[in-house]
Image 1 (cartoon, rainbow, N blue to C red):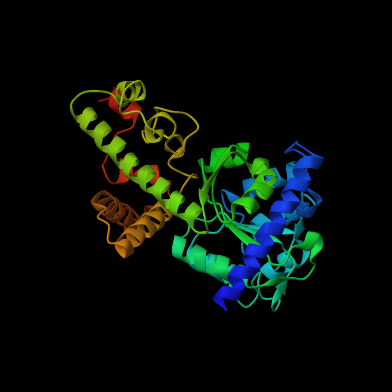
Image 2: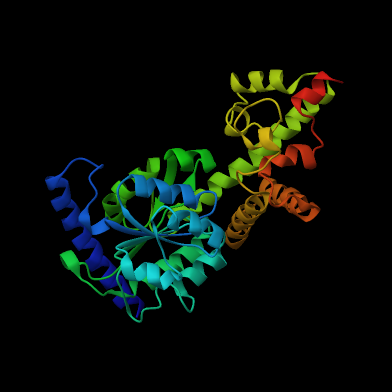
Length: 352
């Protein structure tokens, strides 16, 4: 069965490559939407997904959406966007389906559950599935194989089987809203090339990382660095505050020296230092502490499976778990500055 599935995938990828060459000849503009991807389904309308879906709509795609949160789907239906009750209903009307979900269990349920995307028997309509969730590479690879074992209901342009790309993102809510996300993509390279117009509707950068699961692996590595670097910035600022150096001055030093990083110059955790970030609004919105704990656990489990030592990740995981246990799981992960390290806001420093 595995050999048969592999042959089908290879055949479909080969035909994708021929289609890509044909499309490239017809148009060099990525702003022109290939008719094969005009109908896009989007599942998972959270802080990130809702903004990504909006950008697809702005780019001219016919978008159908689904989410279990009826309040957010109402916002789309009020704008005249098609809302589907079930994932399988999204699949029935879409040429490509994008999922942006919180965890591996959510992804598996949306794809293979009783009303999942692949629950139409042995054949499905979407040619391409793009999962932008942050999940473990092992689950991604298994799901990719499951997708490729299906056949297409409508075999336009000689495609034999659907293909899945894992394409998690980086950049946060602001980048999702502005359409400047970075996509880390795994799967067949030809499929990645074909999907570039879709990615460009939602992001600024796309990086091909390798075969199935490579995008997921890159994302958990990225979030490992993000989580650990946030703790490093918090620790350094708390130490500096206790030694009489203000958070603003420390931030200026970090940002023009070797300590410069995203957690300092773009997403500073100290209230009063930077506008437009979660620390400036009581750590509301942004990237939840619960999600950071989940992503660090994915990295920890992946490293454990491969026999790798990652002590910084292990310690960071315990800190964010403790933060969640103390009631801050819905707050942005930068709240670790206030609620774990007991760091002071800039205005608090001025009055002490």
